[in-house]
Picture 1: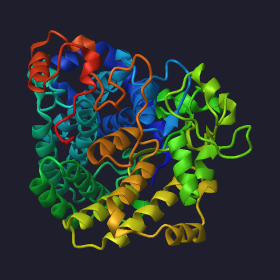
Picture 2: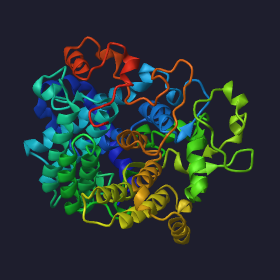
Picture 3: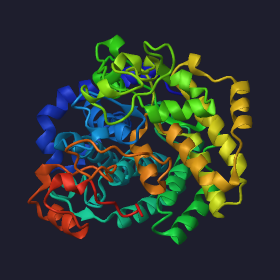
Amino acid sequence: MKNSLYKFLLLFGFIVFCNSSCDQGFVELNSDPTKALEIDPSYQFSWTQLRTSGGRYENWRASLIYSSMMMQHLAATCGYWVGDKYTFNGGYASSLFDRAYQEQVKDIQDVINTLEAGVVGDATMLGMARIWRVVIFQRLTDVYGDIPYSEAGKGALEGIDFPKYDTQEFIYNDMLAELESAIGQLGTGGFGAADFLYGGDVDKWRKFGYSMMLRLAMRMSEVDPSGAQAWTGKALAGGIMVDNSDDAFIEHTNGPEGINRNGIGEVLDKSNGFGDDCPRLSATMVNGLTSTGDPRLDLWGVVGTTGAHNGLPNGLDETTILDNPTGTTVDEFDRINPLIVSVSTPMMFMTSAEAQLLAAEAAVRGWGSGDAATHYANGVRNGMNQWAHYDASLAVEPTAIDAFLAGNPFDAANAMEQIGWQYWLATFLNEYEAYANWRRTGTPALTPVNYPGNISNGQIPLRLAYPASEAGREPFEAAKTAQGLSDDFPSMMSVAVWWDK
């Protein structure tokens, strides 16, 4: 389904095409939208999927340093790993915004424009492209709040150089409508092997689309319960992800071009010449996995010099670690298993574990007809099994999963906390999603740190800050006022987004 050789050849062909024609014709292409029809949309869709998976730049900064550390999946003492200390680095905070609008947004809009022109492609290709556009914008709005959306990526086609910022409420309602319409376009045809997510499998795309609909619907649970319930019903009736064969991820390889590499691996993969050795598994992660006997601890953590699993507390630096009773050097704490952070590991976008756990939450809320305990067990099982996508040696024995479920049975009185904890685990290394769902639910109950000089009064920040380069532009200034943001960019990170109530 995911043919690595085809990926090599496809990206090589696209790069050759760009080297031979894009450099000379960039201005012409952007001034004459019909020129986009000269690019095979399959090539450009493949390229856009890999761009959405992201490179070292934004994965290092927005995903790992900020999101994973704020969410206490990871911890670090290095000064530039600022996320769990809630200090400010504007370039780190804006890195996803910068890269997404430079690459992902523009490219997916070009694909959609080409397919809507009807000269090449088919309706199924258009449906897949529209679903992927939702993937891109959902991450952006969850991280930043109000963003350029309806006019974004349309500079060449419509001459919009400074697109307006839409409200997050508008964006969410439109994304849900887009998903419904796009799923309806899925029939025969599609991108085939040029689709790095599912190899053109339309049934998998349909489940992915409905699972994305469920994710977006549940994101509105606290701000628009009636709308959330209605869209949840549509998603569940349509058919969401069931097992790990439905998981939405892009495989990566170490070349032949850098875009083929996993961006997280380009930060943490020492064996291939990268390797930022600062982060460790957090104490929150290790202690929680230990207390429940979760077999994922042995998959994720490489034991340090203490000879036993040991998580690094968040909020320490190279001085304060000396006063820490659980270890005074980072070598005493669990490193991340290199098998899950290599340049060749998959990048997850959504998993069946997430979908099943969201269905469990919907059932608890009375929004779904399924059994909450069954969905919960499926979510736990799928969450443990998903790591076999990274390496066959990381498969968890079914008996170990059965033992875990028997020792940690579903408890209706504590259901939301159980579901939230398992969702937090299932989204390890999918840090944008972990950060978003935690802000919505407040689970698990993370204990903030109060590091000297933090920007949020010792509370976990509620969004990342926009690029400082947006200051003074009328669309941004209007959005800033509408959201109650001040001119102080660090303080923006303490203001909740629309759905965070």
